[in-house]
Amino acid sequence: MTPETEISLMCGDDQPSYTITTKKNDVATSLDVTAQVLPEADADNFDVTVGNNVGTGSYPNFTSNDNGQLALNITAKDTDKIILNKEYTLKVTLGVDGSATDSSTYLYVPFKYQADDQYIIAGKPQNVPVEVLACRGNESVAVTNYNGTPTVSHNLTSPVNGDGTLTFATEFMNGQATEKTQALTFDNSG
Image (cartoon, rainbow, N blue to C red; front, side, top):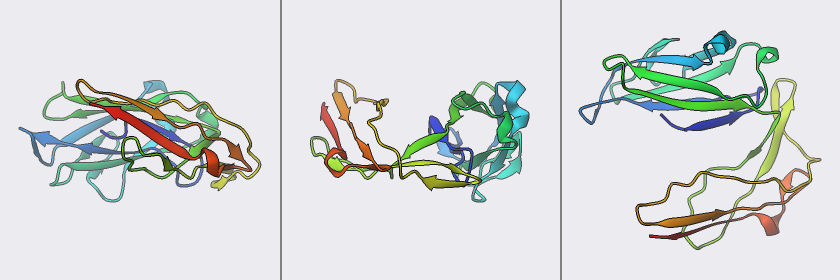
């Protein structure tokens, strides 16, 4: 299941979405999947639905398509019942093998930093435009009065016998990353 972690605002189209790939004997195939929102006490606060018609079913029982793909979207039913910055979990279990499970966490935040996916070359700095988003009513909007330097942390999977460092320390002025601090650098050896 990807992504491992999803951070979302409680407004607009910015909702947690996941792609699940099902395989049998390492071959992508259509399989039944059971989804579960955890903690169970909070499950009724969310709708889990098929995204982009990739797969079929309704919560908690879904089926991946013939290519072994299932897209699931999570929507908060009542935002007043959602606790900001609390980790919730989407757990999926293959119907044919109850021991085959995967899970991902998601949380809702009052504002977030938004950047497009980046494809970078080790050792070559790349400028990454970043903006700050927040909710205004039911819409996600760019924040234009945010100034500051957030603490950036990341998880990095290194190759066997390899090592790598990801560096990104951007400064925001009026809700936008300043041009001189947009450089994302990945130093890798291995």
